[in-house]
Amino acid sequence: MRMAVLLKAVPPAEENPYDVGSMRMVRDQLEVNPFDLVALEGAVQLKERHGGEVVVLSMGPQGAEGALREAMARGADRAVLISDEALSGSDLRNTAMALESALRRLGPFDLILSGERSSDGNMGVLGAYLAARLGLPLLPQAVSLPEVEGGHVVAPCDAGEVLVLKAPLPAVVVASREMAKPRLPSLKDKMRAKKSPIERLDCASLGFSPLPNLRLVGVDPMPQKPRERRILKGMDSFDEFFEALRGVMGS
Amino acid sequence: MLPYFKEEHEEVRRLAAEVAREFEPLAPEVDRREDYEQTRRNLLRLGELDLLGIRVPEEHGGSGMDTTSYLLVLEELSKVCGSTATSYDAHNLAIDAISIGGSEEQKGRFLPRLAREAIGAFALTEPQAGTDAASIRTRAVKRGSSYVITGEKHYITNGGIADLFVVFAKTNPEKGARGISAFVVERETPGLRIGKIEEKMGIRGSSTAQIFLEEVEVPEGNLLRREGMGFPIAMKALDVGRLAVGGISVGTSKKALEIAVSYARERVQFGKPIASFQAIQHYLAEMATRTLAAEIMTYNAAWLHDQGRPITREAAMVKVFASETALYVTDRAIQILGGAGYMSEYPIERGYRDSRIGTIAEGTSEILRLIVAREIVGALRGGDEA
Image (cartoon, rainbow over all chains, first blue to last red):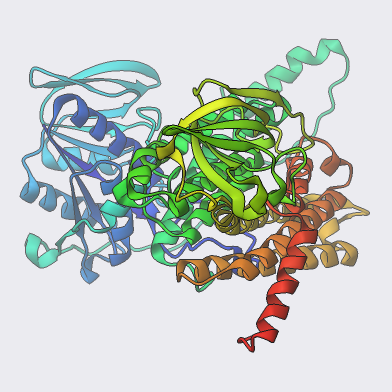
């Protein structure tokens, strides 16, 4: 079974705020979007079960290589980076189009997996967008490892309630963060991956020219809910307390 | 970032920090319940990730990394669990003794296991022989093609959880230090018995045991190097062990500093964060300065060792300074957190208790200062670089 995992290299989530002398960890390196690690783990587990190949595909700057090597250390067989000055600052459409051309070129794939969103972009629509562009069925928010059998893929998907969805291969699976627990690579895997080749693609090799990107014309701060303070007294106020809590949690 | 760190070192640090995150939630209970078995599981987890035998050469099943890498792992472990860090240090002392003194055949026999699934212990100390290690009384007598070892060891880290012991015993009691030999002894060897497991102030999740050796027969093929070479093997292993205490102390100090800074920023008294008070700022500045100094010293010595240079003087300096720094920094951190620092809700009181051993084990601060002084005076007399 051939699988492609879409992977984004993102700035590290937690920057140690205490830059005391040398104490800061080196953080100029990009790392794998943690949500994509789940998709990768799922793909590697499927490979362990059914055999096949896992190709990680990323679009990003040169600095994304480290993230792709991390993916190799965690079990990917091939890593491909689409990197081109013309793609810098790509919006969703250009990103999807570039990935689509690369997938068509590297394919065919039986499964394409992506994480539920990126930790820096947070839009969470790329997998669906790509499925639509590729004309493939989409299993959104898979909450556990998909079953692959008889040319079909089946996965329980979180759509408010858990729907078990079945689609013919090839298909796109978007991994919810619960789908699999990413493994830690061993030190030897990491060192081996440091020497692994990263394949390169650019606009010319893909025969692709980006369209004009969306333009950012402003940032509105998220509306803040007004803060409220209430003091509840006595044993009888529990219901009121839980009611208030339910209101805050929005359910 | 220090100039000693290359990209591969950062990879090691990242991996160690990630696995440390697995150990972190378990650490308070490991300490409270003296959970040696969990510590053993932590070490075996390091084995799965190729970190247990990080300095064991690749041909012997290890990762073939350098001393700097080893200290980075210790540093990250000690940020979350001093017990695991200490056990890992003791395990590596056993590895070092075998790497230093073992033949290729012995390395091939023992190191692959210690790199993955076997825990090591370094059994030198005895009730009558702590700092004065040359005065050990455990005897090893040649009988045919075996040695028969009899004696008692105590305060042996990993004693209760180890699979392999490097045991130091006298083959020639008349010769003092030159009569000491080193043997690898399997846990299951008849006559080897684990005695009392000590209850301790800190690093409570690391097993510190009494070991009885009653007519323990080991094949002569388990003697490291040759008779009489035990003491130099021990001293050379302990040089790296002292750097290891440096790595542990740096990790403990950084963690305590991080918590203290974070707390001081958030804790409001008299309408202001306490970090805005000069008294607290002075504490933090001193803590950060000493921590950085300890870090630089530690990794400088590791770098020297990685260059194949002698480190006896530097290792002694590192151990004295870094261990005393960890005590200072954790003590000040408790002061900054006040009552909260004294409670076990924050890991600082544990860090304080854990770091107390640093100025005692693997060479007390007192004897190490003597070593430093002797090295300096010796160097002057010989017209050396110092």
